[in-house]
Image: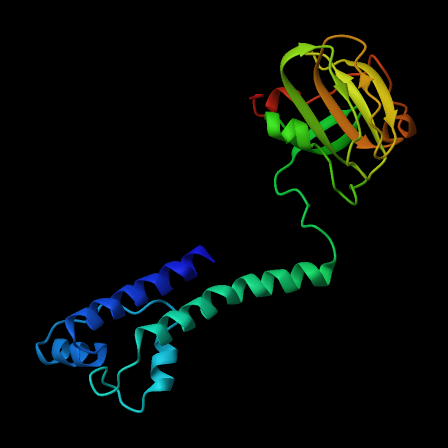
Length: 222
């Protein structure tokens, strides 16, 4: 809406200047045309409006007020936002599918993992998600290896987390309940934590001591 308000303010200011000079805006526009002075470019999306409002091809013979242009510009700018709102309302879910993932491997099992390597990313994690792919997860990378812990505040999906040391060895695996604020801590100095759907590790016989491959290719923590 800020862009729309700016357009209205500009149009109002122009009209005020014409009023102070004692000349209506239509007269000023005709004078500019007679002198051969180019009119400023019209805002995107307004050309068709001006064409429909005029039976002539000349801007000089049919004057459209600045307020009309401003109101139509606001309508044009709001149209994409309305389409997005309708689409989200139709799907009924948040657009949460990851756009960028990294490949990891544990005992010949392939994983596609999102990366939480910033403070904000680590704090948010998988909160508010409604689903997680069978072999999809999120890997957290920490600035310093240490005893790190996870909880499930605002997290709807039941998860299992594997805490991993700087060499890629799994320290321990914990199962976590949705929305629980119970802390689940690493059993040693963890440089990474890998969250998967609950039971993913146990179903594949993955346990403490197994190694996670591909961590060295992740973007560095921040």
